[in-house]
Length: 422
Image 1 (cartoon, rainbow, N blue to C red):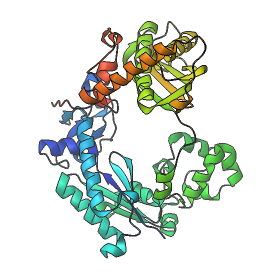
Image 2 (cartoon, one colour):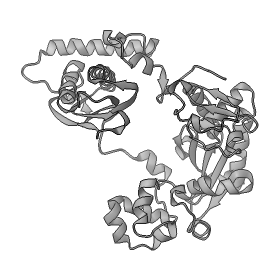
Image 3 (cartoon, helix red, strand yellow):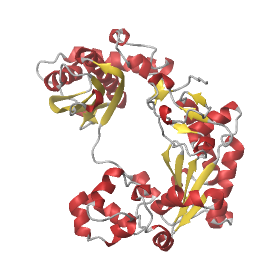
Image 4 (cartoon, rainbow, N blue to C red):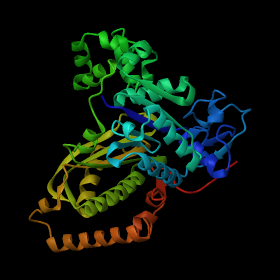
């Protein structure tokens, strides 16, 4: 039987901001958010001190009670990545990288099966030792879940650890059924979102006991092959291991990117943004030495007043050249996009990727001009790697309404460095 520990860095972004300022996260009211996005902006994190006052994590700025005074910290994603890397380095002091699966910037699974005898420690003792080292070296408080599989470890973290001394939860299959089979709401369980909960409620299913005892044919009819995960999890079963995760290779291969625009854009302004996105995408294809013959486009409209438009298009060649790709994307955009409705989201994808060895030209292409364009794109990539993403730009990036320069300063869609307090 295997033993897993999953460790979560408590209200990570807010804790980093507090520690970086020399404050105790448990005694400091701090919110990580960008006020420039308005009072409706989502708080990426709030400090433990604010959570203790009943304020909901991931709330919007206007939802914070007016009588609560707090520090506002604009997200600094590079700083959080730096702290996350430090914590990963701490894991490596105890566990080999082959037995570590980083789940997110603030959470990681550790397969400690082969380490407990080596350290002569129980799983709880090892978890405490790692958590203490994290706190001593970074000032960040961690919580942990321990389980006989990855799912049970995650549930022990998400549900059980909150209600036990030391913030370390433990579950095996029997303990899971005894203590959590009737737990509600069912959305507290890993990978059970509101949509799944609504679909389950049609059959009178409101907890994991109900799932485990529902006719499996109903679940397969409702959820297809994904029912297998739900059925296993309802019984506390998870066959997947970290080794299998690391060896997994996806069957499909694609590159995609999307952005929520800073404000409502009209048809022509969005056309400019699309050209910028295709430019960055083609540079990534060239850098990865792959080509595509299928593109995808999704346009989302302001306030969801209309269903999104776009679609996929097969192109006659396999290429990574910007001039050809942007032509195909603009035709798809022009043919499918509503011209008089404000636009707020743009997403593109390059699908069916293959090695450049499979690049194709049609009879109308000047191969010499294509080679010259690819040399230019390779040069641009080298300059960007050496001097930064904004070190070399196209003229369109300087046009009013262009977003590339601003987005190049973001990490994960959020500000990378600037600090602002109030």
